[in-house]
Amino acid sequence: QVPLAESGGGSVQSGGSLKLSCAVSKYGGGTFCMAWFRQTPGKEREGVASIDTYFGTSYADSVKGRFTISLNNAKNTLYLQMDGLKPDDTAMYYCAADRGPSCTRYRSGDNSYTFLGTEDEFDDWGQGTQVTVSS
Image 1 (cartoon, one colour):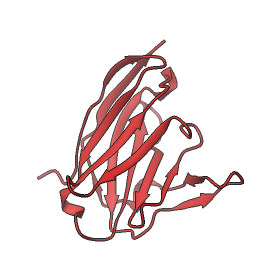
Image 2 (image 1 turned 45 degrees about the vertical axis):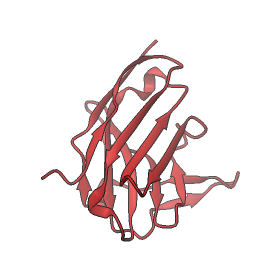
Image 3 (image 1 turned 90 degrees about the vertical axis):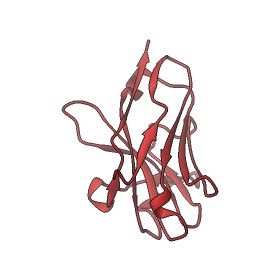
Image 4 (image 1 turned 180 degrees about the horizontal axis):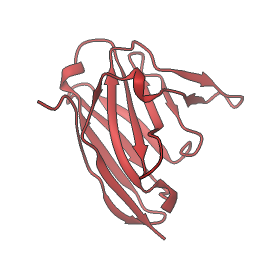
């Protein structure tokens, strides 16, 4: 049984939007750090956004102001709303989770939080969903 399952990827033109979903029922009712990562061929997996038990969120600098991570507890579903998509956002996107209770992040000078989590911090992964942004 796959612990997490993504959906919602696809192809879109530059400036468009997509919303990714991830079923996270295994983590219902407990502490957690949930996140989205992305990876392109030949590169390491990059953290994109996170949300923790206290609903604190953080983002990679490259997506701040464009992407929004959220969690619907009633539906046990994690989301990533992606607006203002750019060709550089093209990648395989993965959701990831562990028991947290918080995620690795730091507070930036503008009072936003930057996500610093790495692959080895997460116990469970989805199979990935492809996002392709054309110029």
